[in-house]
Length: 134
Image 1 (tube, helix red, strand yellow):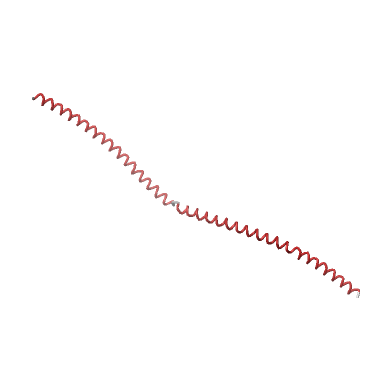
Image 2 (cartoon, rainbow, N blue to C red):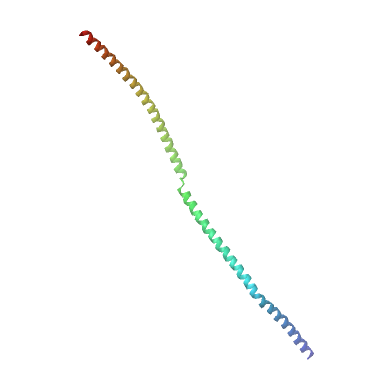
């Protein structure tokens, strides 16, 4: 019977320890749950913030892709460069033609002035002749 009492006392001691342990665990459980809930809430906020940042980055990527799509390709640039060279050559030729035409115009103006001067001289001579004849 002494052994049974010892075992019984031992079982009671273990039960007391386990009960105390469970009481402490049960008492701490709400605190642990609140801490966990705050942590989960914090993670949700971080997740939402990162999600918004990702959406903003995606919008930025789409904007940049659109910008890049609107940029001319290498072929476009080469084609435009070739067209520019052709147009510059045409412009040079037209400038030369314009200078030639301006020179010719000046020559023609001089010729016209000379002819007008000759006509004026002829009219004077004609008048002189008419006055001398009369």
